[in-house]
Length: 315
Ligand SMILES: *[C@@H]1O[C@H](CO)[C@@H](O)[C@H](O)[C@H]1NC(C)=O
Image 1: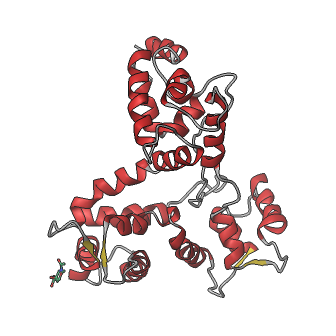
Image 2: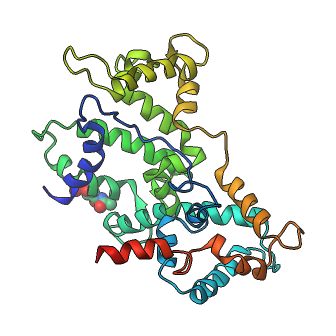
Image 3: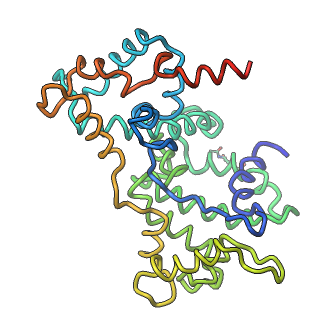
């Protein structure tokens, strides 16, 4: 298969991937978690490191000596202090954490950019995207591989237009990022909900009923009994998803389900980091205060002693 087909397959294959009947098929929900580690500072600061640096970057610090870690942290502090007043505020820290968390998204867009920007003008037009992604289909509109390219293309175009704020059908890097990762952008939330509903709402009545909800995560395995987690999901639907208890989820209820927004993890972490390192309790941090508590913010060989032992055993 060539690259175009592969790209299409990336989205399709995840959508159509068959799962074992008793295994839960997970829709991509936007869980704004900062780390998959447990947040227990009595044991380790791993969660804080992931939150502050992003999980990938956090790993790279674990190889450094404490001196090197402090030095790099000092350089980061200069970047966090956006207004250059010599203090890092809770707000600046929160923005930094949000940026660090999105780094993998920026990297992902960067890695795809060259391929779509055919004329290398630093912008990606809908025509460029369509030609690269659907060129094969457009040349041969009736391929025999069972995929509905037409429908996918219509859907992509709709999403592209939504991401393209100024309506010129040409995406800047920011707009293209919103196109590829709509769940990260407030102004794309409605289309994320719409696409999700179209996927699940098999009878196309504009609502997700209980059977459609279950059908999206579980395919019946002949006459086998429903596993326990499916029963739990049924209860979840009735108790929490279908808030107005009319037996089905409307747009708002679907939005609450896939894009929960009740808790700002970045803000909570920023507050926590300030609280833990603000020695003179003036509500903001100096570079010295941060570097003094460097092991809270970043790892190093010293704080990574246990892991180093494990790594040593492996070789
Ligand atoms: C897209 O493909 C069509 C048909 O081959 C061509 O006419 C058009 O110029 C292409 N557009 C871009 C931006 O490459």
